[in-house]
Length: 277
Image (cartoon, rainbow, N blue to C red; front, side, top):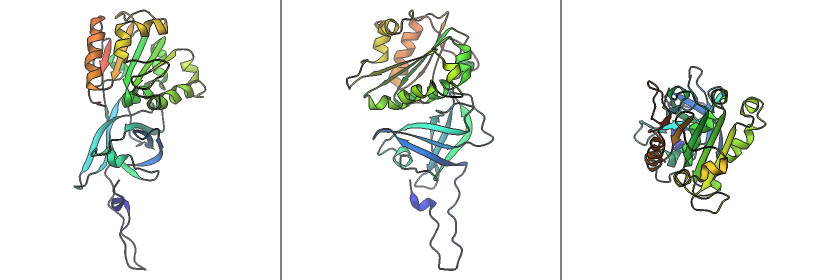
């Protein structure tokens, strides 16, 4: 973050300091948590006028070096009922935005355009018995919102959250989130025994190794969880991850007979195309 942008200009003693120009659509950072040297999450104030469906994303950012807003699409990781907004981000040292965003502190301001959109919403899926959330890396963010939404558990008998990362440390955000739901006074009673968490790693040794696509193709995921293979009559899925994951998952899901849905045409699965990471 460019500290000079937020600091008041120096003025002679006795004169009122000029305030730095306010950010457009500014929201205040409430807390920041650095999970690893590559991953962090943060919470900001929520605009009073903002209404969103769990799973949607908004544009957030900072002022660029050219004085113009530098914005990127970020899924809202907090549920629609939360009074604050949570985001989960990767750190890219030479990234135009994240190279600065990773240095934010409580009290700082970010730009947040209050126009939520996205396909990872319940409205884009037909009713079903079981829903899968397939995530890699920070693609877990929209599902962090959905697993904290009572509507998810009202619509489905089983909720399966898969999260694939390189290392065990990269899984910690999701692990702690899922663990906290059991005793959460607001959502715990809805979650009950419906939520099943399935973390895997691809590089570091862990209890479950392998890419989620491979574990789907060879049937390992189904045998591990004790559930039948994908069935378009009762299974629904949401996918958020890299372009490679999106492509492979579409092939797997459509091979099982599931069709891609949209807000205007609900079906059996949806993919978030705005996310790449």
